[in-house]
Image (tube, rainbow, N blue to C red):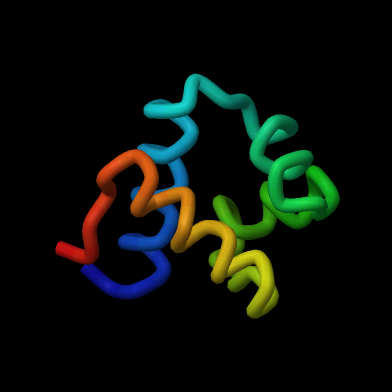
Length: 66
């Protein structure tokens, strides 16, 4: 699985684990809803700060780098 597909799957899993809509994730990361939607659709990558916060959230809910 390529990086973008793996990333999308991890974000979907995180949102599921946290029971969050895309809007909730956007609010948590302090980014726009459209930014979160781009990550899931076109494979755009989040900015460095958002990637770091996502990494912390992944660890919090036990989503590894498998």
